[in-house]
Amino acid sequence: MTKIDANIWHYSPDHAQLCKIIETQTLWGDTTCRVWLPGSDSVVRIPADNLKPLDDAATGTLAGITYVAAAARMADALTQDVLLVPIESLAIPLDGGSANG
Image 1 (cartoon, rainbow, N blue to C red):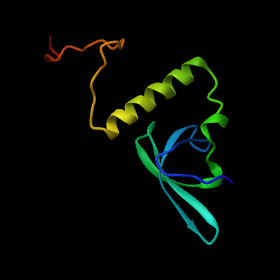
Image 2 (image 1 turned 180 degrees about the vertical axis):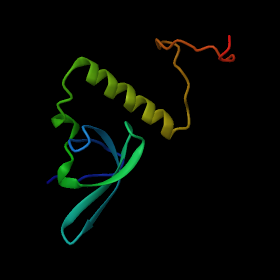
Image 3 (image 1 turned 135 degrees about the horizontal axis):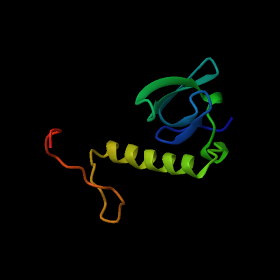
């Protein structure tokens, strides 16, 4: 098994989504990782052997790749406490008024 470093993105087949490693811990020869799952906004502990590098993730469809890229960009923005929409983005601003019109 290759060395797994914190703050690196991997794919969790158990959860069928990308995850970011927060920390790793080895005890009696078994390595486990605490990972953040952005799809469910939760932190779980996973055996390191269950994680796959992004090269082996096989995300599949174009929609899946687009979703993963958008989720990774949002996750990165959240770690920097910045949620600004870039000028070149295709985001549509929502009306900040009341729901009644």
